[in-house]
Length: 97
Image (cartoon, rainbow, N blue to C red; front, side):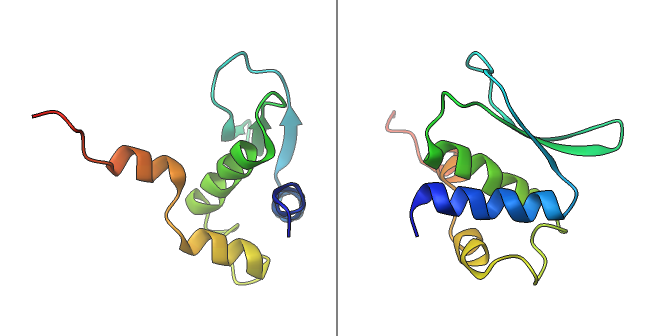
């Protein structure tokens, strides 16, 4: 499955679990999941490519047990089993000495 199709699958399931999706130019600010007045939101910047947007959505899945449920799409569960790019970047050792 292509990245764009995977993103659409992940977003569709998030909507079914009560998330609202907003695509907005965020001018370099990171998007992601948040709760506003009790409503779960996913903010995505259309200037980011599909892989970057998918990583933000997967981060939301990792943080929300409802999205990690057994009824989530199998492909998404497989992707969640892999370490996230964002946490891998944080965990990478520095080259300084």
